[in-house]
Amino acid sequence: MRLTKSVLFVTMLGLILAAGSTVWGQSQRGLVAGDLPSFDAWVNMNARNYDVGERARVSFSVTEDAYVFIFVRDPRGEERQIFPNFYEQNNYVRRNERRTIPGGNYQLMVTGPPGPNVVTLVAVKRNQSWFGEYKRFSSSNPYPSISGGATALANRARTAESSGASKRGLVAGPIPAADNVATASVEYRVYGGGGGGGYRRGSLDVVTSPNGATVTLNGEYMGRTPLERDDLAAGTYRIKVERRGYWDMERSLTIEAGQKRKVRINMQPAPERD
Image 1 (cartoon, rainbow, N blue to C red):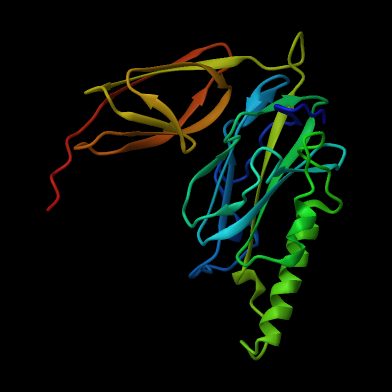
Image 2 (image 1 turned 90 degrees about the vertical axis):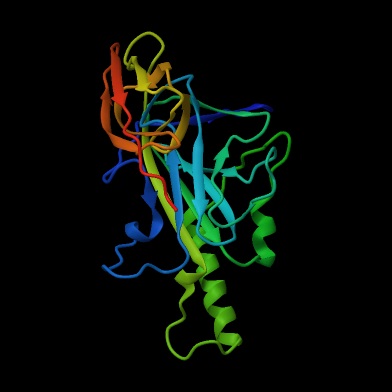
């Protein structure tokens, strides 16, 4: 993983999602059916697959105000902290606030070698005195390697929460540390690109009647119709089209490498609400 002042080169391998592109942390922890705990986290990538040299974006949110940390584990097992970083140092995120990195004057750019990578988010409700250990970035090392990475931070936070709750006499029995710590992760795939071994992009053409509808792919805003995009990684997407006064349309579609996918939608008026 090579770093520059304004560009983070992140080694990424193709995105592989077992249950779609949106991953909520509690579902990954295997909770049984029923009401979810109040605190949860979500993380996603802007594409399922990347070629070397492509720019990447990471979107995330939490259901309660929290301190958020995000790590990338490369094929060799090395983990780097990409949020907070030298360029975005404030990692306090408000509940239900949709955040995307990079959010400043820097970029996340994919580089080799090919292989599987994982982005993991750890969110902690309460500030901890040892959080400073995860803010040791600098202009020469804006995205530092972290020993133990996301797992070490999450375990330490859960231990601290359990110990703190016990000292405060809040519970009698198992300490619900999971209510104060949330995690979520997503995998993605990088191909060789640049002269062989990579994959080609596909394109999307969306027209609605009437036009002016908002289009999102996998939850990411793409623009308004009529919309043409020729920079999409081949793969399956969840498209959603919205326009005030009309019913929303949402479904899955597949973008083929080297081909244009055309979508034509006659939007249906929705009854006015009182």
